[in-house]
Length: 267
Image (cartoon, rainbow, N blue to C red; front, side):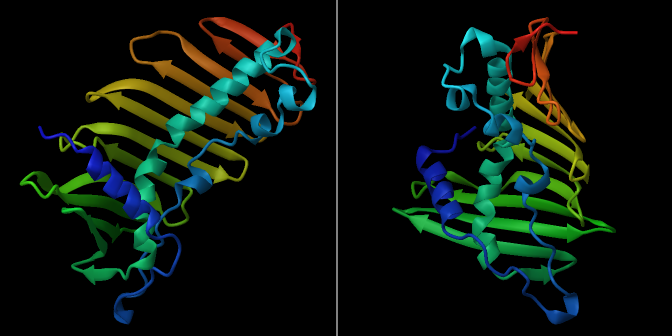
């Protein structure tokens, strides 16, 4: 198995910066407009604004790890860290930026955006496809790479997924960037409303499940869990944005905070 070179990753990153925004609704008028490329930052992310807006260190002049705020501080750290799992897909989705400035072609029931980039003898070609179904769209991205020294690969699928036309439900699988075909991560979400959503992300290591991250929002209640494969314990963070209270459960121990973000006895 040929591992992708560091230079290849740089090429991909450069591609991701080469375009953002624009009109992607071209193609034969008789075929209508292509589907809108989904933005996972809108609904497929946990809402951790509560922790972003409340920092004991910034608002109360204390160290964030001060014992008085240890429960909240631990929960805040885990919640912010949790967004990393949910955001892994953004690394891949960033490579779609050039598609917003490219015309989509329609052929045999499939829309396709394609774009190329080359530098210092190396080149990357990307195809992003969309096949519309009844009420949803199947998406896939394929990459071809030539390292200029006889190495590379052709038409390797790096991600695929499905989203509903309104964007409230979807699922994505992202594959390891090494031709192995092994999944790196998968994510699934359902956003019933602006205040109700569920999100599940699975992270894989060498093709095996490593970590499962879940997030649920039900009105003012927010729950985030972390489960490592082979470990019976589940770490949990719960917070209520109305009462400003919550708890963190880690290694079987439950720690709670009150409306002032200070440690309190768990009821």
